[in-house]
Image (cartoon, rainbow, N blue to C red; front, side):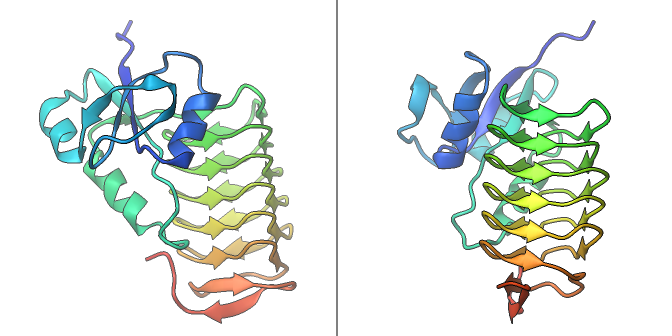
Amino acid sequence: MAKKKKLIIIGAGGHARSVIENAPENTFLGYVAPEPATIAFGLPYEGDDGYIIANFNPDEFGIHLAIGFNDGCRLSLRRSIIERYKDFEAVTMISPSAIVTPNSVIEGGCAIMSRAVVNRSVLGQHCVVNTGAVIEHDCHIGTNVFIGPGAIICGEVTLGDNVFIGAGAVIRNGVSVCASASVGMGAVVTHDITEPGIYVGSPARIKETKHNG
């Protein structure tokens, strides 16, 4: 039997603190950030990315990426960090109050937060399903996708890589959202999104072509 790896959390902001609070006690050995920060629960500072990659053996350590989304709704920073840590196992964290049905597939590094629901769907690596969000049946979610608190992803929806779904947004059943698109808070998406950009309103319309790339 393979030895269980020690886990470190990448990030020290609000999202990282929420992940720590939703994880069992003593899940993480310490945290990684550009410099020491005040982080809940007394985790020790292990160093910055360069130090960890140079000194921590991927055979012994796993990571959970918990960098937040303060850079607007761009996910490029997260993508670059995912690439830096490509040799480390990415570990998924699922809140005890979340519901993930048995026929769902959750790839490594995802965070399924409090009271979130994932129903018979597939999630790629490093996705965040935030507090109270719902992913209904037969959805396919790409890599590095953020689904905000209270968002509803109806059945048979496809979200491409690096998609941002804002808090309280609703994606109609059967809709596809292309890679690197962003859906604003409270927006209602009723038709396929085929062009990266920021979409707002009900029904959602493109606001600008700036995207998560």
